[in-house]
Image (cartoon, rainbow, N blue to C red; front, top):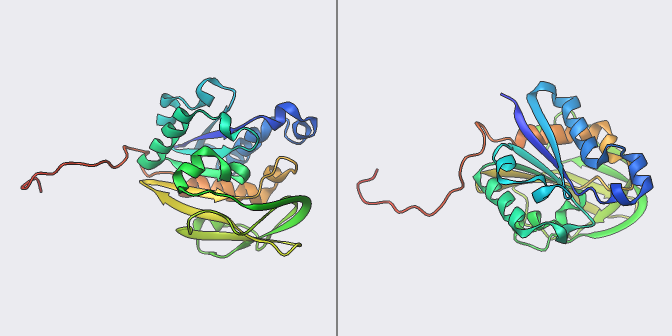
Length: 242
């Protein structure tokens, strides 16, 4: 059975900046979707959605048919409707997988699921990023170079205002001395969440084979067996019901 993936992109930089359009002619969401199709083939059915779509492309029916959602946002976090945020969180608690990419760390969705500020230290100087695998047996790390070299990227540095990851798969280092927990796994309710930091709009990161491999691996890791169900809720149990 195929994994149903919805690739969500804010799609603001692509509309406003010619350089980003040249770098990502099908949008950043299009590049992410293309990488998943390239690596996973018939194992996935991939659709895309953007901020500009009705209900941001994340209506109840679409989310009900989504096994894994990927999320990239940056310039318009506050434009995401709170009702859609609540809907996404509900589906994660029910078992839908979620991949949060780069500056999506500051999205309403990720902050709601983490319950923290999700802030980072950052600078943008086209620095080289080395992504080091610290958990080589983790399925998300399968087939990933050690280290994965990203020639140019926005720099993120600690402290990263998130809860301690359930599993830390990658850390990154930069020439300025910064280190960053760049690949973090969480479980929220029945759902699995993976945060991956590389992917700034000013660099062709989502065209890079190693990055595409990580995202494909993460989709397989985050997909719920048998699809998402219903979130756990308070249930009254009478004596003798078991």
